[in-house]
Amino acid sequence: MRCAAHPEVETVIACGKCGIPICPKCMVQTPVGARCPGCARLVKVPTYEVSGKYYVRGIFTGLGTAIVCGMIWSFIGSLLPFNYLDLLLSPLAAYVITEAISWSVNQKRGTGLVLVACVMLVISFAISILFMRFILFHPISLSLTFIDGLAIILGILVAVARLR
Image (cartoon, rainbow, N blue to C red; front, side, top):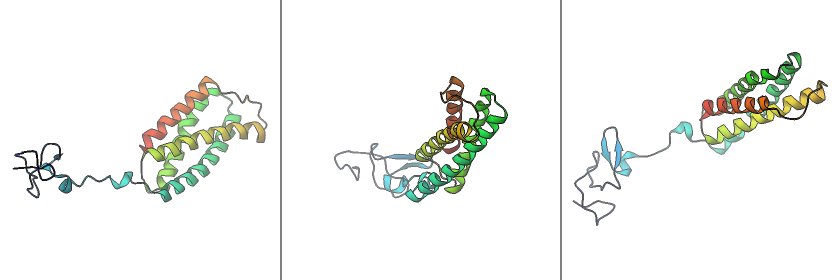
């Protein structure tokens, strides 16, 4: 037999569904055996097919949630002025932001939505600092500390785990 896609290649393998001869280059291994690319139907899982309208929804929902989380974050930070509290508040804000984004895009997932959530977490952190400094008039430094960087990294890890 000769491969249907590559007539110069001899083969003894045939598609388990339609029976056309296929070479090892064309063969797609599935749980039920070797299939040709047409019968294997390699398509993306619908959960990972995110269209533009879902990105727009995710961005607006994430931005709204980031603003609210940033204000709550700064309010809690002004009441309890422990710098280490950011290590708890950042992952919590990331969880809330990613859940809001996930809910607004019908539980879709993907790298683009992870990036949206990470950007929204950084926006939330910036809002918490600016809100605390200029609205609540809490005397804080606008410089980032090691704890703040670690808190943002923890929040990003939560966002990645929730939306990848």
